[in-house]
Length: 341
Image: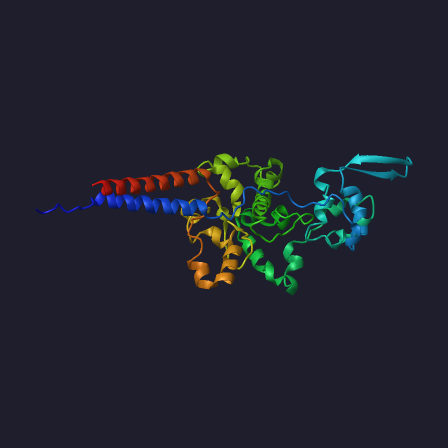
C-alpha cells in the first residue's frame, strides 16, 4: 500500500516566509537607534553669571552693554542737571549672556561699529553706517579657510534670498553677529542644533514684523503651506528647514543656497532612503565617523539598513512584536498539526 506524499501547500510556505521577512524588517526598523534623540531636549547654554575677566575686551564692551544690554538706560542731562531714564528700543537691546558665548565674544564692539559710538549722545548719521558682512572679515583668511567662506558667499548670492532682495538681504538677516554660535553636531546635541537652525528661518518666516522689513506681501502661513507633509509636527522638530529648502554642497558644512519654493524637496524617498539628502547633510558627521571606524566599504555599504524617519515610533514597535508573535504561533500550530498526523 502506497502512502500519500505529504506535500506542504505552497501558499503556507509563502505566507510563512513573508511573515518572517516582515517581522524581521519591522524589528530592525524599530530596534535601530535613531540619530535623533527625542528625550534629551536641552536649552541653549547661557551662563547666569559671567566672569568678565576671561574676556580681554569685556571692560570696554561693558560701556556699550550698560545701555544696550538692558531694556532701559540712564544719562545725565547737562541742561537740567538731572538723571534721565528712558526705554531702549527693543531691536537695539543685545543679550549680554548670549554675546559672551558667541563666536565673536573676544571682539570689541568698535571692531565692527564706528569708534564714533564712544561719544554719547551718538551722532544720528551713525545709523547709516555700512556693517561688514562675513566675507569682509573672513574672506581670504587662512585661519578660517576650513569653513569655505568664499563658497558660502557664492552660494548665498545664488540663493532666492539674495536674488529677490539683492543688497537688502545681508548675512545679518539670518545670523546676528552678537549672538551667532556655531556648534559641532553630535548625537547628544542634534535636537538642539535642529531647533537652533530652524529658529533662524522662523525669525522672519514666523515673525510678521521681521518678514515685512523686506516685503509688503502677506506673510505665508507656515503650517498651511506644509499641510501636505505627513506627521508635520514631528518633521518640524526633527528636520532642518534647509534640508528641503536648500541645495546641499559636499564641501560646505551648512547649505546656503536657498531655493525657491517650487524647487523645494517634496518626495518622501529623498529623505527616507539609504542615499538620502539627510545622510549627505544633517547626518554627514555620522557617516564620516562610521567610515573612520569601519572603513569605506563597511561605512558606506554596510551601515544601518533603516531608512531615515522623523522619529522613533512606539506604534511600529508594537506592530512588529504582534507580527513576530503571530509568526511564531503559526509555526508552532503548523508543527503541532504535522506531529499529530
